[in-house]
Image (cartoon, rainbow, N blue to C red; front, top):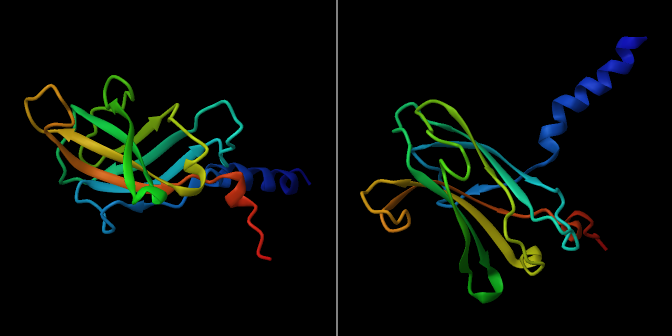
Length: 169
């Protein structure tokens, strides 16, 4: 009898991480040679405009075995607004090592980009396509955005209360 009560709990624990995962696509539509993104999670899920907390993103991926180590890079979070001709607004740029403690990202290894306190506005709810871009500082410049290479990028919409409870009527 104890096993019959434990089975649903075990199944819940197994599928619980997937409940906060969301649909995403690669920014370039076809993927990147650097590696793959396996899932994107957002917390809270769904995002409620009245919440005081900014959403947090977690991007899970694996660098390909043939890729190079990224030991100096950044992660850029941006939003594109449909109503303004897909104008792309860079919300913030995190240092991969100092802010996210996610480096180095080594060939063939899994990585997690844990991005907290993302700037959020209720107008992003209906029209904002978010992107998270992994940048590799390939040059000698102190400005990461000046001489950086995009290694990976994903786009996604925030799951919101409004999109969760859409009526079919």
